[in-house]
Length: 442
Image (cartoon, rainbow, N blue to C red; front, side, top):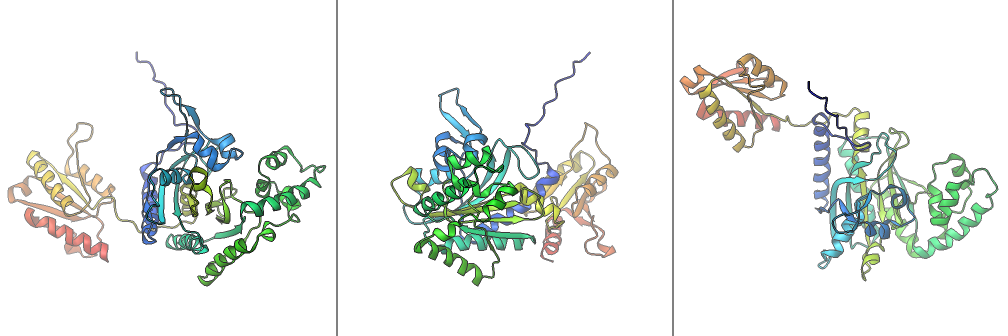
């Protein structure tokens, strides 16, 4: 009697992306990657494991990400304190400094890949999640901030997405924030005897008083409606920067709302911050966020290098696309399915499939399933299920005549005479190539 093996499950909050979903992922990623390249951004790839100190110094030791959410561990082989990356900016900045990437001028960089945070899993928020982000390194002006926002707006249009809204703010520089936080704390302490003055608020005040502003508690938000506004503390340089960002956005017809409570979750931000939100995803309504971080590079080097960037939450964007019921035109995963019966036909089928792939076509060659050779009927069922445009059929008669049958599985051309034809083996490649390319062009 065989013992039942223990079933192995995926880790909570870390999901499989199955083929039925990966098609949409691939299509979405390709659209985003193409857009980024059209704006002059180049890809950078960084490790998913970094020194824990990198995130502690960049994100801020008091942030929820560092204190509660990072997957950190001691490397048993050498004793290093390591972490799975919780976000992409810090890793990119480390790579820029280590490899001296800005020796010859500013850089436009983009990245994609998995990030890791130990949060309570829910729709649109997972412990392993994917981000696509950009970092514009070495650009000091409001123009790059505006360009990043305009690029996002173009992406939403390309994806045919609606109900996405831009929230904008400026959190100024360190000196301006310091003055503001003194007055903010004084305002909050006037209400310390109220029920809303909870442990969470005390904790936020003790670590980073700005984080009180993005509390999700509705009572707290009502109290804060009369609190001082950080925008009123901006001096001329910061105010001019923010006004110029808005000027460019307005000139390009980008709608936005100024949210004076928008501060972002990482300590490295300054001046421009922004988020793109939607009303279709419930509480996890942010699909893209970013801003300026002029002093992050100086934390790890002696150079002051201004920078700006953003990151897109891919799972949330996928969820929004599904809820919006948008169907994108995508090419078939297979152009031609090759059906064959007999040993000679199998050899010819291999030769044909390689010739067609050389022409750039996508080909599936029927292979034995469960050690049982399949007849024409069962193979044609597989051909139809493959969503291929054509089936190429090779049997004994075709071998004898050095021909094959080409069957139009989708009746794409609405012409009964083209539904099925017999063609010489030598001419099959060019015939199929022309038919498929013509259909793609149409």
